Figure 1 (cartoon, each protein chain N blue to C red):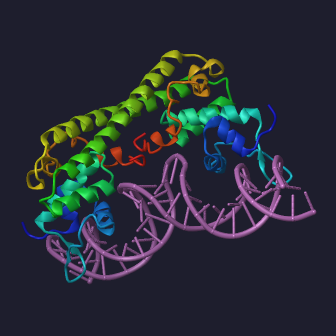
Figure 2 (figure 1 turned 90 degrees about the horizontal axis):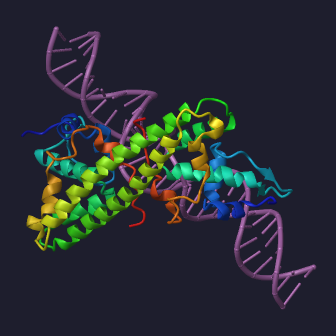
Figure 3 (figure 1 turned 90 degrees about the vertical axis):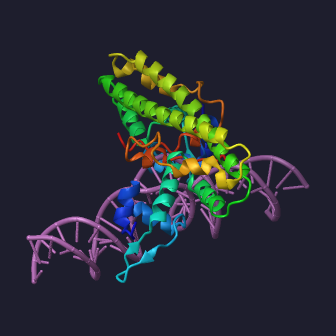
Length: 154
Length: 154
DNA sequence: CCTGCAGTCTACAGTAACTAGAGGGGCAAG
DNA sequence: CTTGCCCCTCTAGTTACTGTAGACTGCAGG
């Protein structure tokens, strides 16, 4: 497994070239060797590292947590408990979001079922959105709960 | 229901003052009257409008969709179908995220169960993260699927 | 050797949806 | 009149990237 350019690494890990450079810039990836002309050259270990990062990110770990995980990986011999804690924290977060989303799904379904062929004047989707004494307002800062919805795919 | 300052409106809708001003700046809220000294003064209708926005945002509708919904509200008489479409699109999105999160939950649980009291050298959380031929990699641009996880609460 | 093109470089700007802070002015009570 | 909270604008920061500009490199075909 010889040295590879950033493009190859990108291909091997499904992480975009720009993202790899970004990870380097924020210190998630070490600075690699450079060719005489300044191009980054990666060894096989970078593939592992990057897959690790990718997978952790896919699991929803924020970059800060990934950083922690990496530092734990680098200096082994300490208790697994820390890693476990990070994972549990993440699991809690995931479950919180699951609950949220399930409530959203229910409400959206209800709205759509009610809205069949009516005119806007009586459209219950709009009416439902006008209500506020509804299912979602137990926690007050619910604002940020779903703030990060990308919906780029739409 | 007399005119109210931005602070009152904020209190009545649980939307932060800065956020209200932000909504105004992006055109979600109309510019309100001003007092002689330049303070914003809102009428009761603003409460409704803001609740509508808040609720739609809580349901995960992106601001662009909220904008559409508002415009549909403003010029009624057109078919409800458009509103319905937006809601369905949102429901699809929510379901997609639900599926994702359920997979994540399963994997995190598996990881945590495996990681009980071991040392880091054998920690299966870290090991699991190193794997990549795993449950989450059917879709290739999974990168962005969970990109927006805030986890500020942690 | 030349040309073309894909790949790479840096650096900066933009995205979503806010949030936070600086630095100043307004308003009612004591 | 002062205290203290509210309000103003404007700018910058957040997260995790993505996109763009403009320049350079590396390699294959002719």
